[in-house]
Image (cartoon, rainbow, N blue to C red; front, side, top):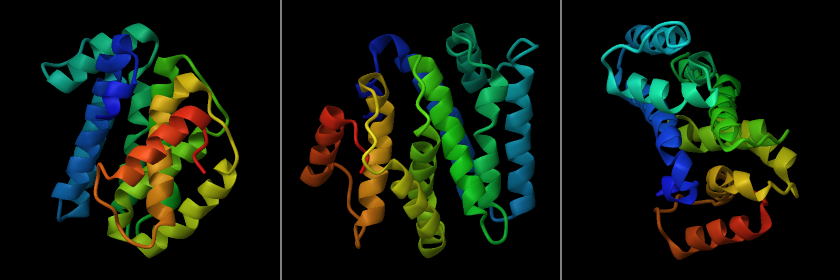
Length: 202
């Protein structure tokens, strides 16, 4: 659903980045032994970095990055920075500042695809990543998320960035609510519409 808010010409590139991010998330969710998860994450990080000076291997997700992102000036090394946030999840205890930085890297990559920048994007990306992973340790993640919310309070993102910062608006809603909320509720739909019009996360 998030992809439908992006310009048609960029959807394949954004999807390629989100598939890599989802791969990192699946590795963390699917490992019971942190060291094994770290090895798998490292393989993907190194494979992404190699795209900057080698042909892509016969792996559809890496081929998509090469075809859709590298041609738009997004390096494999830029995308590889997202991996570090997932490394933070495998630490004991989880390093929530590190997790947030992974979200910041994700937002920087997609913003570069959109051809836009904003000095509050790092906070928006961190907030979004923390919301996505907070089920692992909600009380530990919340103080850092609230710091990001304070940074974003009253800030307006430019219209071209709002398909991306929509995700931060939903993350803010999740952290500010006392109870979890299912997807596609009227309240979430209203939050997205409000953000589209105002550009404000909180």
